[in-house]
Image (cartoon, rainbow, N blue to C red):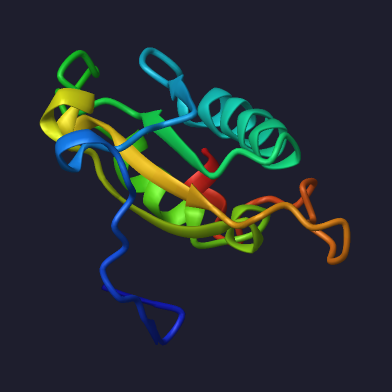
Amino acid sequence: GIKDGKKFKAVQIGGPAGGCLTEAHLDLHGLNAQQAFETLRGFMRGSWYKGLRTILVVPGRGKNSPDGVGVLRGKLQSWLTQDPFKRVVLAFCTAQPHDGGPGSVYVLLRKYKKKGRVYWERMPADADLYE
């Protein structure tokens, strides 16, 4: 895929039989967009500072949403490409079926460096991503 004008080569995340070894996971089921954003921000910040590289985020597919349409999945993809997350996210993709498939996302984090500033307090540029 293309992100910020850069082409990503396929990122293979090591694990048995092509599986992904995730170091932590976050389940966003049942949260509204605002709660999900705040929860994700705290989780990603903690994961990055701990030096974790591969995490699993589960926004769900929206089967239990009022309209039966999941909003968090689309929002998650937008959030990961904007501040504050874009400075720590190297890549992300849909999870394998055994990790939740289309209702889950693998996120590959950059290595933690003391140099460089991550603006954790920033909000998404597009207001309706948050509401």
